[in-house]
Length: 306
Image 1 (tube, helix red, strand yellow):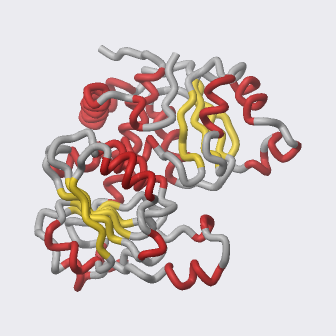
Image 2 (cartoon, helix red, strand yellow; image 1 turned 60 degrees about the vertical axis):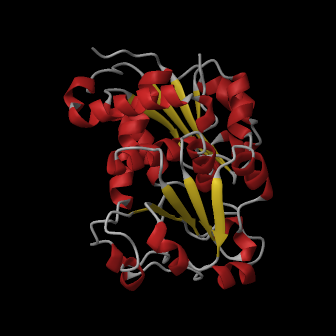
């Protein structure tokens, strides 16, 4: 039995196989429509989510399986004080696989240690969000045809953004990837990501404050929102939330083959006028998220489709 807590739980070769499977699912969905008949996924979401939870549920339904779970801690026995370990032991009696989102870093890992079914980390605090990373990798590979020799711009909340931390950790394993880290001083990438991931892998990167300075050199721009829920006071959030707004004028500085990604939800960091630009790929990204989660479920359940 296997769990996924981090995108690094899979080798580059395994990730490539999973992305190839996701590509086949995209082309031949009917082939996979009954692959998980009789199987159940439990979506245990201790904090709010739209895309991730519904993406997992859609993925399992597309595979012919069914869904149980809860959408907030208030609607589970966590409100009565039940531990994550006890919850997963109970859920293991009901479901074949579980996707868990939790505000506390490490909670899905604790669950995996007590679980008798595969556990997928669907986001734990500001730590990891591996299935968003799988989605991002599949999106980049599908749009650019490769994951190596790319210049990736990461913009916005690089301090608390778990999607950014996971994506950096995954992409440093590919040859020739460079990063441009675009953020205000207060929201810079944490030192442990710089030292333990970027520096340790000898990955080329630069840190800049102005988005305009970075745009002309990028193959991919990965925008993030400033996350209100990660701030300790309202004043800091208000000061930071409008620091970057990608609009039509800024897009004119970018290459014609640069794509814009965003893990969503968007607040106002990407103007709606950018949505009609053919380089805006954040809604395609959502669809790729369903394909890669279908591939992940099949992989963890060891279901083979001929």
